Length: 163
Image (cartoon, rainbow, N blue to C red; front, side):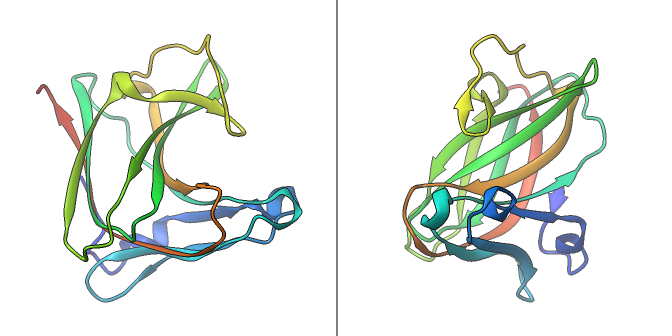
């Protein structure tokens, strides 16, 4: 489990924004005293429009079938992202999820077999199935084609076996 209520956890995450491709969006993971907060401002200028944060993870047991995320959202759509390295190739898998802006904690559970392989926003149709033992990185991304501020409070990310 990744406990995002620990004051030191946010320091393990790295931000990647669309400025790597000429955009001007800003985003980062901070700690607000109670949870880690992925926040910033999305800009569609200069063909931009994404912000992400990610961290490496230890190898997961092969039996892991689901990921549960606990958060307080802002009404926007995010992506939970899992990256694998296999035979020297990195493949990123995404699962989009919507949030509400009620201010209430929410939990969402995602089956690994429902993640979609992507490369620079495009689906990869011939990618191998996502296997827990291959996952080396977990992250969050926002790219909902809406400019403006965003903020999602993250409490925990848990890897679960069975249903």
